[in-house]
Image 1 (cartoon, rainbow, N blue to C red):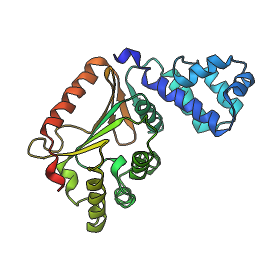
Image 2: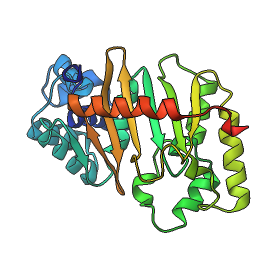
Image 3: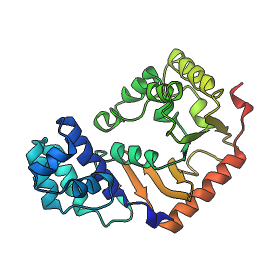
Length: 265
């Protein structure tokens, strides 16, 4: 099942090439002509169906006059295209990969044991976390936010995956922000628990003590689970090996069995 999904670096590279072209406002056929490629070949690069050599990636981005940082990032992705599991050392590829995996998913499962997940964080709560000085501002600035989550729920395109958030009881303790910020954060989460296309449940510490199961996100399509993202301090590790994904799927099911719905009341 995981072999039908492009490997992580290929997915990130495809999204990066597409974004680089769109940022310059250049159509696909026009760019194909500029870099002497058939439009179908360039399209296959942007869809992740084919992987361009690193020299081709450098040429495309040079023609687009993309920033050096973007060139370096995407050339590195091209060189790592064969890696089944992908370690994002800097956090630069994380947003590309998460967005791409969500587009390929019908279900996204997120386990957050000690903090409210980024997708549910209010601006004030996220700022309080950044103010600790322990969060890498550069890699967290463009991550999913509560505002984007609400926007998708109120103006759905019909292609968003169903989202399940399991949150550890430790996250409900006001240790990471002021009382007012925490109260507003909790109210925002409680309001979302009523939405029919989203599930937000609490896992008591008594059944899963903090530190027992690390934070992770599981991506599934109709064929089953195909990828896992495990965050680290500056980015994330993306896993697609079948046995590993299966193990995380079992853990997700176990957490769901232990979760409760009425704890938010």
